[in-house]
Image (cartoon, rainbow, N blue to C red):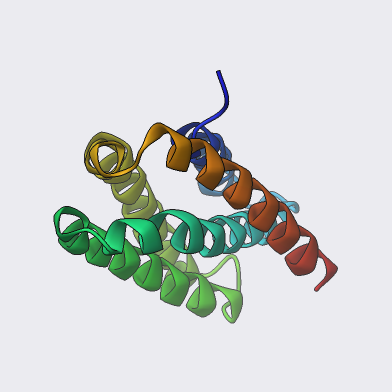
Length: 151
């Protein structure tokens, strides 16, 4: 059976959780900057592709309107935190506080998405749509990753 959009998204969710845990444990690790860079790229690539190839489809159905808006708002809040963190000293108290807020927001968002949003979306999308969206998501996600890594 072909991969669905939900399986593709869960793979990125696993990467996000791993990078977030690594960042939270990094403390004075000299690789903290690199871990943060990898997380920032992963979040941006995932969000862009997910919004284009899942949220847009779900926004078109009345059952998906409110959950999609909530998920988009979460993405926006996480983007703002990441932006603030980019400009701060990566060892300061303020930066660490923002990192903890980002972790909490990210974990809550992923849990809510996997437990609620995917269930609603699964009822809205046909099997054909689920596999087509997975292919489109994967391509856009890879393209975004390359673009963001290039700087």
